[in-house]
Every structure is written in structure tokens, then in C-alpha cells.
Image 1 (cartoon, one colour):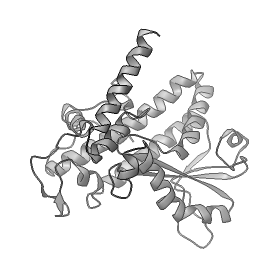
Image 2 (cartoon, rainbow, N blue to C red):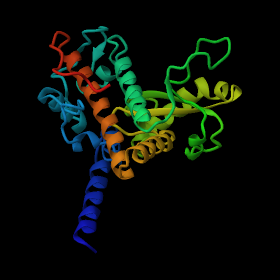
Image 3 (cartoon, rainbow, N blue to C red):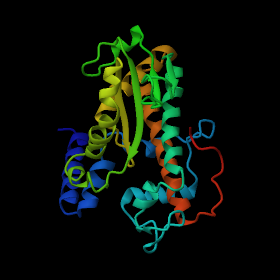
Length: 286
């Protein structure tokens, strides 16, 4: 056994003991933050040109969130909606009154679109008229039917249909999913795929000759399993078009999405601590 493999076994055993001795919310958090790819934002090489940077106050707030430390000194009223705001920032990341959830959602959509463009994939933002006679827009990003889509390894998908990508961010510690998330990483994303996104759009997309794929990310950075084939496809397209190593292109896509998510999380936490705080210097990743 190599030193690396031995060290890894020690780390796995230590994590298992820590999870088993923790409270329910920390069990779910620990499984999420230790999942593959969740901590990609921590490994990013800072780049102001690409907006892949964190301000000190953002990074400090995110570390508290990541480690399960209190974000606030005491339970207090939310400055935006007035409800009780917990110390650990759950409400701050789920509050609907600030519009910050919409900005976070849109930023992930834009990151996907930008990588589709880099990979030469025909993609359209918020395509209208997909359901005749309805104003519903099931596709935050629509991948138009093309021969290239046949390489998408989505179950029951031949490549002859356009693909509706519907983005969402859900909280790992949400009451509906926390019990499952405490024993299975990615359970909150899977639950949201099934009980929210599929129920809303899946059957109607099928009736209209479309393939529906929920692109769900948890607040700690875990992607739902349904998103995985799409992310791999986009990264492969970027690698082929830009003559890059596929592993490098995949890493860049995941790290970009991870920074986008966590910078928006940081802003939600900071704005709920002080709604009059000045905006962060430099643009957020889009």
C-alpha cells in the first residue's frame, strides 16, 4: 500500500467517525462538503480577468458556512422579510424577498451558456413557445437537436430531440430532504429533481417531443446525478474545440460553476447580516 492510499484510508475512516458522532444537520453538511467536486471553489487559481476571485469578507463568510459555524451572533429578524433568521444562514440562502436567489440561478445559467458557446454547442437562453398555447419556459437553456447531441449519455435519449436544461439550487438541509441527505450525498438534489422539477415539466416536455433534464445544484456545490451527462458533454465539446485536455476542460467548468454558486451564497449571507453593506468590488461571475 502506498503512502497516498494509506493516508486516504485514514481520512475516510476519520470522516466516517466524525459523521457518525455529529448531529443530523452536520451529518448532511459533512456528506455534502466531502463529495466529489463540492469543494472546487477552494481549489480555484484566483483570476481577476475571469472573475474567479473572492474578497476576504466573502471568503471568511463562506468558510463559516462550509464548516457549519454560526454566521450570526443570535437568532434575529430577517432585514428583508421579517421572519426569524437562524444563526447558521439557512434562511439567508433561501429567502425569497431579496431577489438574490434569482441572481444565483441566472448566473449558473449564464455560466452554462458561456461554456456551450466555447464548445460550439447550439444553445438558446429561455427559449419561448416550447409548449404550444402556453407561456411556460421549461428550458433555462435549450440545446437544439443536432447530430452532436447523440453523444449525450442521457437515459432514454437518442439525440434526435432538443434538450431542455432547467437550473435550480436547493438547500441540502431542507426539511424535506435532510434525513436522506444525512446518509447519502446529493440526496437533496435528487429529491428536488424528482419532486419539484420532474413533476412540473417532464411529462409536458415528453408530449412536445422534448427531453427534460433538471440541472440541480445543492448550496454546498453537489450537482444532481441527472446533470452529470450534460456537464460532461459540454466539457468534452470545449476540449475538442479548444484543443484542451478533457480533464482540464471538465475541471474548469466545475470550478467556474462552483465559484459562481459560492460567491452568490456569500453575497446572500453578507446582505442578510447587513443590508446596507457596500457591494463587493468587481463583478460577480455570470
